[in-house]
Length: 534
Image (cartoon, rainbow, N blue to C red; front, side, top):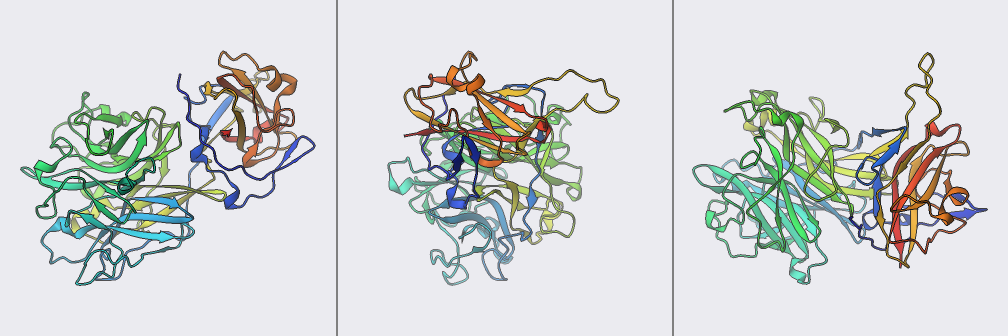
């Protein structure tokens, strides 16, 4: 049985009066960091495997009114032609840091790969961005630009996924990049190039490399010499690094077209020669035949990952193929994984972020960046744009946009009302409830539990009970001693017998949640958090 890994984060300030939970408005700094606790999302049927009379409803994010929040530069700048956000956003020490690919407008440069460079931007709020003058790389005769320094140089970057790795004992390797570069065999092929950095601005490959026409020599490949586009994501899971990307060959099963694939490394130096197919869509089990790799519904460019401790949330590309490029479009889907390798959709063939209409900045196609941040009462999801219908014409391209959700509310469990309408067969009253997987608990360590739910009130309550691994109720935390949550909020503390910090639990517990009250159909449960107290 899997034991979630717990960390300590600071506790939100709440008002507790007369045994009832009353939340005061939370400021951004009042929320604990949900990436450092165990989160059980409504849409995760591994974490919440047992339910009755409940229905999952996924939420569609809204696009930020200021999109794109990061735009192309003026003519003659490194990103005048394109801001390609196969990139990353990290939030560190109160500042948002963004890495992206800059595409210049120097059409006289015959080294096409050399026109793609890694660039950097910063923000205090995640919405208003500046491109700092880093002074690290010469472009157009001077160093007045926001390009990060990468050695070897030049080497064309098609994407830049950045991972902070504070666990690495070597300060020079605290940041890691996986990028898609090119190498040559009979034709130009994509591959992975790993870089490390002490500060996120000056990077180097760990082996000495001399590039050829801004591409990687075949002798310096860390992966097998096949076409692989690691544009999706970079993440760490149970001690292994994973680079997620796209290719359509060398699979043990005959999938059609683009599939999400991952290579792995124990140390970011030596990479596996075997890989895993992470995600395919249902239609990809039907082969369309030779010469039709562009057609059909496919999975585009791997998976960008938000590591939430014991579950990975991901965004993947939904490729709508066609016989001609002029008809190809791309949306974004939502996936998750509980083992770090295999991803699945919580809702079949569901579109998470839709491409913009013609004339909008994100028309034709949207692409997944690895940028996920909870900011105040909202979740920011950063994404990019690429219109595949006109790519051969080298149009202006890209930018960085934000899609918004209420904080951590990707999807909700709600009471199922089917069979209760006028004229329907009237079903007997059924309890609406769910029971979680067994959660690992350090014996003797106190635990805090929190609820993320909406629609609660005196007649719309969530009763919360604790059970052992075999689902026997724990006497002090069930029945008449059950906790009752009747106030909406993103991080509402759950109290048993007037206590927040729960001690004396067995090494594994389950949580049972019952939707109660005459207006229980108003309840929308989004997530449950478990946080240890040290």
